[in-house]
Image (cartoon, rainbow, N blue to C red):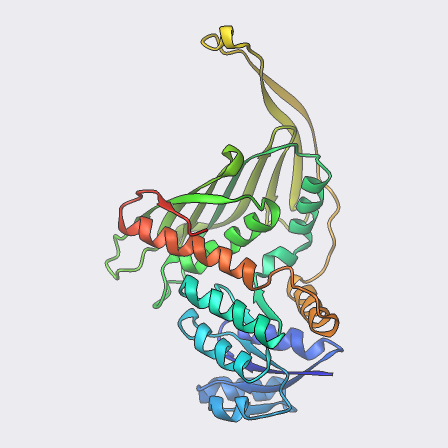
Amino acid sequence: MIKIGLIGFGYWGPNLARNFNVNPDLELAAICDFSTDRRETAGRFYPQVRLLDNLDDLYNDTNIDVIAIATPVSFHFELAKRALMSGRHVWIEKPMTEKIDQAQELIDLARQKNKVVFVDHTFVYTGAVRKIKELIKQGELGDMVYYDSTRVNLGLFQQDVNVIWDLAPHDISIMGYLIPFKKYEVSANGCFYYGNGLCPKSLLTIYMENNTVAQINVSWVSPVKIRQTMIGGTLKMVIYDENQPSEKIKVYDKGVELNFTKEELYHLKVQYRVGDMYAPKIEDHEALALATSHFVDCISSSKIPLTDGKAGLEVVKVLVASTESLKKNGVPVKINS
């Protein structure tokens, strides 16, 4: 039985606690939070769990095998480093760290200590995203042309990060899993109207190898909640809508064919292919439950997680470059390779 200690019982911590508690191979041994109210809430749901108000008691508990970190990103690095140094496996919420060198240090330290670092990019474990990956691997979509996602809603304004760091990690991680192309540079434009210094609306354009481009639209100031991704291939196109209760994925047999020789370049001949649409069946499971089981399997079998430290690092690289581009009013910034 793997014993896990959870740091943070705020927004996402309760979801982690619920999944850790029901996994047959995990024991939720401790929850640490500085807030008395949050500890009391945790105690009502998990009376058998040790409740702590300081980190030393958690890290000094030699029975703890795993430290799960559900805190603001500014605390991720130090908490994860301390866990690895003390010989624990680590579960880290997204985004992995604030800085590229911090993420790399955690990766190196985990390798030295022979420990697992798992970054909770939950959407990678959804049935819908896994089905799209299957379609791409089977070649049904053809070569990848573009990735276009919209993740907008009204609120919640964050005090410590802008909307890019809050919402875009979901789409960057999904894109990295589905289309693992080399990313060259990113341009980020945003809105600073509300004057708190934190951008609540932004559009990222990411340029990748094979002339593939991605655009990620994120916002805290939309009147409606939209969670939609379009992926264009040379053969077929996919729309993934997280808000749909059923038929979250629709595959369209539509596309564009350019038929011309070099001599006909200035008389561009375009043919539009319009075929059928179908909605493939997807696995019905809670993504976080699957992620938890995968994490346990990686610890037990010494496997590399699907969303390991390297995957987390790739997301941080895009976020860091996006922040720099945002400061430069959208000037493209190279993504650290």
